[in-house]
Length: 169
Image (cartoon, rainbow, N blue to C red; front, side):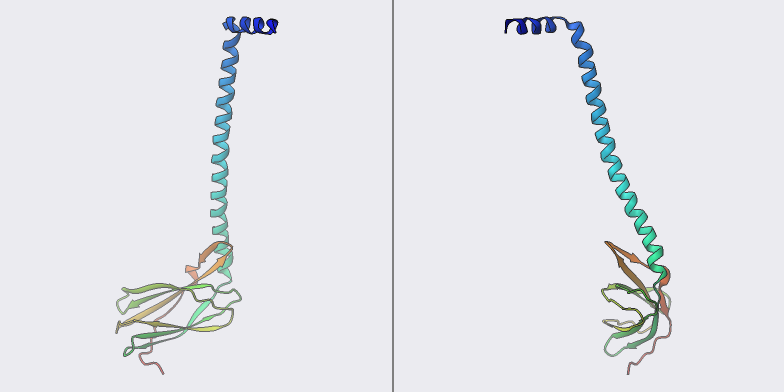
């Protein structure tokens, strides 16, 4: 026991031998901290970039198989209802539609997203209440599809109609 304590005292007294060891320990600690920071940064960067790339690829691939048309638009001015009959003309299911209503001078009246799912080659009628504009000039429908956790808005596949029947049968 006495021999170990004497050896420890000699190492502590010899300060020339301790200095290089402390500097190496500090350099290694700095390198480990720097590499941990770089690792966390790169993991976050690659996951964000991957999500952005997935969304861009899904946007082009999924929207290619979407086709929507407006079959008829009927506005009942006495009950303030608007009936829009839409049809999915392709083989991809449409999960959401956004509708935009414009007056005769192309000023926006209303914009809303509806949770309407439309299977391929099927028709559906959107019944909108509270449309009080007497001069409805344009109706646009923009389809959206879901892919994994993304909602892809296919704005280049929008359907529009300027033919609006004033009395619904």
